[in-house]
Image 1 (tube, rainbow over the protein chains, first blue to last red):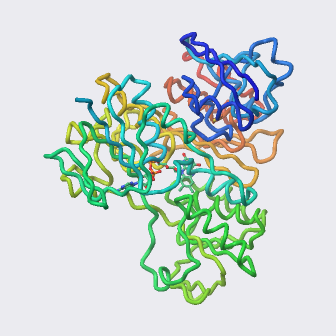
Image 2 (cartoon, rainbow over the protein chains, first blue to last red):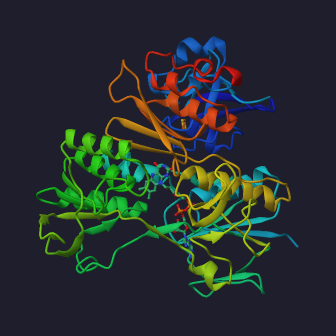
Image 3 (cartoon, protein in one colour):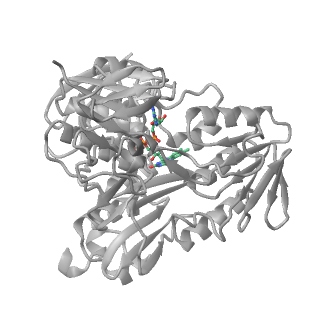
Length: 104
Length: 411
Ligand SMILES: Cc1cc2nc3c(=O)[nH]c(=O)nc-3n(C[C@H](O)[C@H](O)[C@H](O)COP(=O)(O)OP(=O)(O)OC[C@H]3O[C@@H](n4cnc5c(N)ncnc54)[C@H](O)[C@@H]3O)c2cc1C
Ligand code: FES
């Protein structure tokens, strides 16, 4: 079991536990505001954009090429941006903190 | 008395609407019905990864089984609605049970069109591709077939995705398209040519101007006298909107269930969302019907907000995607009515290009092939209504950056 914390754009903090699937799926299953996962996790929609807390960025890793293309011109992109459908819960560091990207 | 929102159809539209109602603060009852007995799932993977995944792979669920309980949504699967009584404000199920509503949402979508071909219904290895059951039937039929010879009738997105996936799963695939080019109904010649070439290069036979007239004992007969053999046939020739319930209830129908900007039908207590609606699009100033996840999801949220008495209008820019082989196509906007198409090919990558459709100075749509950047930029530019420097856009040596592509006065 991994603990993953989401901070929504309304500054609500929700900590979830999961062991498999993508971080997007975990968020959707728990109705995390701002994570929609409209394309089902195939890097086509960018409705699963998060900012990784800086201290976890190294472990989580940089976005892949297709993911990066979707992020580069996003209004809310920064150096910690990831599409969380591309992060596996199983591979995520325990205690990971993610901020849902979007207007505050 | 607690009020009830009753939603017919638990797919992309209906499920999104149910959860969005809770997010908007609906405290009454939510009943969500579907004839399909399966826990609601994503449809797009059915013709894509689902066919190539290992056999025991799970379907991509829209929500986990527990989520419905947590959100207090009464999900009733395997229940078909037979009629709507607007005066009594109730619906009658096939079983005879009646359920009353305060607000009703029709998220009834569409069903595959099965042309009246001799042999089509009798031939037991002919499948449509719409539901999870269809996809698992196809997967099983392929596994059980000796020659793994597949014919796909119809070269639209679903037909082509199914062709690519079944090919990957080991089938010998032939696509028979009636028109003179693939995707004739939905896209331009540049894209048709690209996909024709892509499939040929991958070893899938694409044959155009093939009007199938009959299916007999594994033989698919065309109007020009040609015959193709198959142990398995997939029919992907389009859909029919499920308008019958709405029509019988006297709602306005026009190429779909007609709704206003709040996703409301001509009965103020009845809303409709998704594939089944005929709605106005403000960006293109015309009425249309769309078959996409985006439309179902965004309209469902508007309906949920409207039901909760919040003023919200549907003004989304349409987008869509399709995955075939290693190619990801992403489309934003509607290219219909364009007067100019500019192709931009990125020099450093294979199969990476975008087609930009204009009507005069106005950017209408972008088809982005393996090019998420073009998709995101196209979305931005269509939303912002900025004018684009077309010469720079067409020149692959010009950096692909917003500031560089916009006309100077607009940056
Ligand atoms: C194989 C496939 C691949 C696709 N790929 C893509 C893609 O890549 N990208 C994209 O954007 N879109 C794609 N689409 C389109 C997308 O899936 C649809 O636009 C979307 O499902 C529409 O959602 P909906 O809720 O409006 O309708 P539907 O998904 O059609 O759902 C309607 C539901 O209503 C139920 N229903 C109807 N009548 C009744 C009744 N009387 N009683 C009870 N239940 C009833 C049906 O059982 C059904 O579950 C694809 C579709 C298919 C089939
Ligand atoms: S869910 Fe669509 S890009 Fe992540």
